Length: 395
View 1 (cartoon, rainbow, N blue to C red):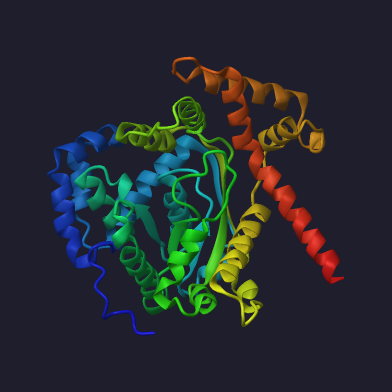
View 2 (view 1 turned 90 degrees about the vertical axis):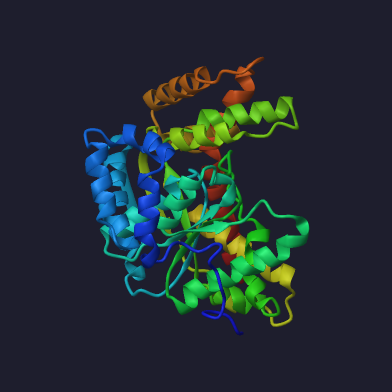
C-alpha cells in the first residue's frame, strides 16, 4: 500500500513547528482572538500572556506554556476530579487511534491530552470538524494545538475523495509517524448519551486500503475510550434543541448556538470526570471470517467498539436514579439514597428552569434530561447481558 510521506496533507494537518511563530504572531494581532481570550486570563494581563505566547517556538512549547496551565486552571474551577484509567500501555510511543463517545465539543480531547501530559505520554492529535472553525483565529488556534481538520461542508461528488484523503492522513500519522489520534465515534455529540459508533466513520478509516478492510482497521490499533462526566453543563441546551427540533423538524443550530454550547461546556461545572480505556479491537478483527464482506467487517468492528465503551463507563448515583426512572424499576436502588433522589430531581428542575423557549414542554424536557443520565447505564446493562449470552453460547 503506497501512502505516507509522498502524500500532501497541508490542507488538513496540524501546524509544523516551523509554522508556530508565524501562527502565534497572527493570533496575538487578531482583535477577535484577544476579545475572546482576555477575559479568561485574569489575573494574568494580556501583555504577560502575549509574551508567553511569543516565547513558544514549537507545538510542544505551546502546549506546555499556554494550553497546559490554562487547562489546569479550568480543571480546578470546573471539576472536582479528573481521572484517567488504563494509560500505562501508551508510554511506548507507538501510534493508536482512540475512538471515544462524545460529550463535549472541546473538552473531550482537551482533557485527554492533559491526562497524557501529566503522565509523560505524547499528546494525541485531535480530529475537529470544519463546521466548528467559525473564525480564522479558531483555525489557527486548533492547528497549533495538534488538531487536524475533518471537512464536512463538501459536495456529494467531492465526499469520496475528501474521505479517502482523511483516511490516508490518519493511517500515515499512526503508522509512519507513530503519532496517536483521538476521534469521536460519531459526527456531533450523542445528545441523549445513547452512544453508537457510526459505521460511516469506520468505512472512512478503511478507504486508504479499501480492498482489505479488516487489515486496514487492524493497522490503526483502535482503542475504544469511555468518557464520563458526572454533570454535563450543556444538558439543558441539548434538551432545548430536542424540543425545538420536535416542534420544527427543519430547525438547525446557528453558529451562535455552537458558540454558546462551546462556552457553556468549557466554563460549566462537570463534577467528576473519568477517562477509561477499553481493550483494543484487533482481537475481534483477527477472528473475522476470511470470506466476510466489508459490511460484515464494519459491523463487527462497530459492535466491538460500542461494547468496550459501554463496559468502561463510570457511574454516579444520578446515573442509577435516571435509569430506574426511565425503566420504572428499582434495579439499582442500592446505589443511591433518598437524599440523592431529592438532589437529582432538584437538579433537573434547575436545568429546565434555564431553558427559555416558547411553549416550553416541561414533561418532554424532563424525559430528555433523564435519558441523558440514564442511557449510559442502559447500554452498560445491555452490554453485560450480551457478554453473558455470548459466554453461555460458547460454554
